[in-house]
Image 1 (tube, rainbow, N blue to C red):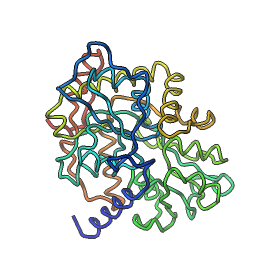
Image 2: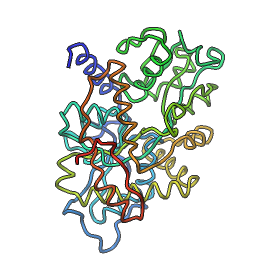
Image 3: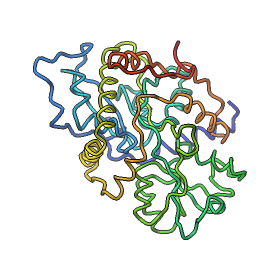
Image 4: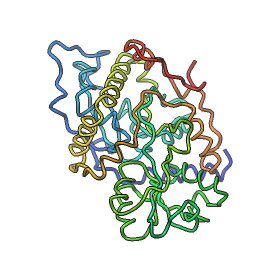
Length: 369
């Protein structure tokens, strides 16, 4: 990797890792989720693969709704039997990757850019993507007094969550498509890209220090509640309006040593997505209840309702879009062209889907076989 790109990628990863977590747990990576009363172990249940526990990571974001519902409704614990489901909550992808590498978690819900970075940094040896979870839920929202059309974005200050994160890469790619120039590392250029933690972006908008943001839900809807307007839904830029926003990853050694436990977690994910799509209002409420349990604060209806509506929950990892997102990172100068062959192992998921009477999902040629 050329020195300048290597340095830039390291700085981006360091910047993402430095962001504060929701709270610190004993492991030092994320906060522990509270046990839910619905997640009781059935009488006579047995441990899977002889494991006392399976450690599952996720973010306190609506785009991780599959995990939120899986925890709140007890799907994970039910599927794992007498093997305890334990949870860690993260606020930054690199911290979750670090936790995976250190074996503080076994399986996690995570965005595409951290998964790509984690895979390439380890030369393809630390993780596999084993399933999809969500598509969409990302918007460009702006101050309507300052920005009335897409061309008005030029010269304005627009926030993204982190240098090199999934939304940052998408926004940099969109800027380039407009024919504008921005230095990826500094964020300076025809548009000022201001890397801002999602937790503080609404306050930054209210103070006038940013003119808008390219952000995931529920941050986008929080800004709208403060008077911002949706200028662009990222889904409109993708074929069939679908692109991966959340994947499921696993440690390669855990997948090899405990395949039945991995299948159990995937079954819980498939069951959760099935229930979410059949019961959208109840699922929205369940996700919000888990957010409240994890963070101490539920989302108000004016934020929750539009945010949830913009996210599609799917078992399909939408592998071709992951490859496109990697190409966008290369185009922005944030990543040397990666070899993603082998990043997916969808055999366990397709086994679960077949047993459920569902259709197999595709790895776009990026699978292990």
